Length: 171
Image (cartoon, rainbow, N blue to C red):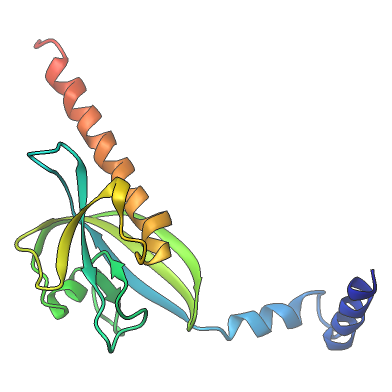
């Protein structure tokens, strides 16, 4: 209870009675940067095991979260289009399809990740295929918990739709 009273006293001290309640807090939060990232998820079925696999690349020593595994992508430069991020990173993909957005807190502010499904032209030198059910322990948490599941859900929905279309009687 003491902590609640102290917090309430602190908030009263920074709140301006001439402004709507919460304006000071909103103004403080709005100063945090929001970064826009494009993430590409490449999925395939392993022909031997039948397991659904995802392409992950390992981040280099000069990148944030060095050594961790993630889907190809990165933070956009001002004016850059999402599909150009991959070109800049030297990853060639096609059928770049938007799936959804994920908003999360990051060490450098806020991150809005635009998740895309893509087809891979070739595996990058730092890349490897991993079974979706057996991701490395050092996979970037946002990718493990949000980005990859979004693409897996879309993958299964697409397969179910194709299956329904194939089994529909011809008119």
